[in-house]
Length: 494
Image (tube, rainbow, N blue to C red; front, side, top):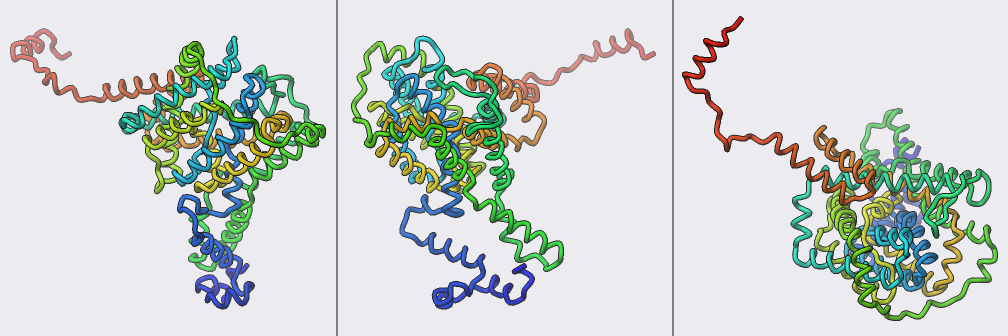
């Protein structure tokens, strides 16, 4: 062990002179070299929000952490509703880059799930102008709430157990969908699960299970090792401490592997192996961007069928839950409800007019990117650059690649994101808080409506507080002396 050698311990505790590092790169220990490169990266002339908080590889791994929800919804809308994939990739790429610069955390850009569900599951299917109208209507409401400060007012007074219930239900919903992706063949065009997935094949259970085991071995439960490792050199040099330091070193090496990125790249490779004719069907260049013509009938249908169910979900999951989760994951970089609400409104009021998919921020995407290593805005900037390249180079023909992407691998990525989001609810310290959280989550899952669960959670929270109120405003109830003596005479003690 490098920690047992006295000279090497001196090198760890004592900074290496700059001229010796430049002349002899092998002079410093691996730990010092890693810290030296981090120091160089921190001094690069780039915005503070883009400076990696861990390593470049960790940020790259975190950048694909939310694709388990992004790819299925985008693929479904492209196949069923004929959404312009090239325009969506380009605009969501610009959104990713902008949010990474502005917020400084891996703020995700996710499709509006309720609008997507209505568009493909209800008959008649929503047309692209109706989808766009629903997105613009939802964005206008969120922009108004954010600009007037009402969103911050609501955020401050919503009880934490209710928010945790919404997060728990959303996380478990992601996990349930992920298990279906892994176990059964999926037909996104019809929105139904098919026959059980076979064990063998390029999209078989073995591929999905091996990907899951690899992610578990490399990332564990998602805990950060930075604090434990930073104090390891200060521990006494005993046998048990040396063993613990070796274990922490090994875990740190494993956690530095961009496991999610490797799994995603494996999925892309399997796309071409499953259908080699994809290469012939690829066409280079983006599609032509144009304004979407929206009629009055499209506005009415889009608002009634798409915006009304999406607005409460966006307020709860895209703003309130995101802000609460960011405060948990990044205590020193908590984002405001006003900024997140205005961000959702601005994104859609810019891109939807050109046919881009309605998007929002999501707590599940933030949890997924954090789970796989995203710690700064650089994570989503890398993702945005990748989307921009794909949208400009392949355009709408990229849907041929997405259609062959192994659904089992998407299910694995979605499973980890869902579990990470659900684990945010583990901070309920009292039985009363847990009771409110679990009822809210149960109603949200059973009724398939976060707004319904939210309303039940608020009502239950108020009832429990009312039960504990001291009703001194009615005054103490006192019995008169005559009544007291009457009771004593008529009701003698046995």
